[in-house]
Image (cartoon, rainbow, N blue to C red; front, side):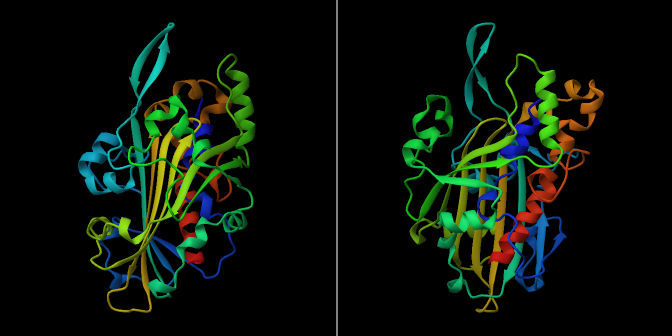
Amino acid sequence: MRLFDWLRCGLVGLAAFSGSAPALAEFRIEDVPLVTSVPPSQLKTNTILFSDRSGGKSTEAETGLIRFEDWARENPQQKQFLSLFPDYAEPTIKVSVHGIVKPYTEKLHIYVAEARFLTGKAASAIDLTRYTNLDVIEKIDPSIKHRIITADQARPNTDPKSAHNRNPNRRWCEAPQSICIESRYPLEGKLPTGVRLANKLEEGGKKISEFMEFQSEIRVLPSQDIDQAGLAKLTGLNAPISGVLEQTIFDVNQVMQFGKLLAILQAHPADSGKTVATVFMVLGVETDVLQQKKEFANVPVLRNLIPAQVLMGKSSFNSGNSISAGLPSYVRNRIRAIAELF
């Protein structure tokens, strides 16, 4: 009964700085098996190459997701740069079973999306610091409300229950050229009605919220923190990296453990007036969310709320082109918005 929490929490990796901004150019999405294998010479103007399947043998056909341990083994470069932090592991949390507190490993499934597109600007002309400005963030998607938070308000830094999401190398919200925000988004379309119905059927259990709430850090990586060789291997493009924009979702209230967006700008090898942008988005979803089927299937009005179906935008409860549309549509629209803004 927690799918709505997943929708309000898990589909957020690009929401803080993309949203529904008016198009400055017409971009179309072209699905490809593996974005990072496409060289710049094959990129077309106003075309975004996109893939949201890992392509590995362990990817599950129903959802396109991959188990965390399989992802870490098959894609070590992605795991290093796209996890909450490089040494991140599935968290061990404490749960109460019949009044006895026991440790429990929260198993995760990983959603991976990657995109590549050209910008008609030289790398030096793209100012990534504009995306660490609250005024710009708020104008991009007015439906999502943000507020600035400090390091002491970042829950993993201070809350023992969120300690597994603490960055071992530094405190969240203390990086240079960064902004930390707490964001709130009300679900749209049919989903609020589904939330209310699910809450009525789940008497005595934890109520599902009609809002998406999360905390994240958005930062521009300083040049000294850019791993030129490692990130070039991640993008599959041997060209200088001119800038990196990173959004790290380090706290959500349910269902998802973390999220990471990484936008990497590289000089076009054959045209100094153009930049190649490669964007990755990773979400760590709690596996038990995907395993919840019977409780929905046994209630006729909720049969279309099976988590995997709504997650992939295959439910009658999906609508619009934002978060409520489901993961594939939402992420495509957000990446298109980033391309237009660049």
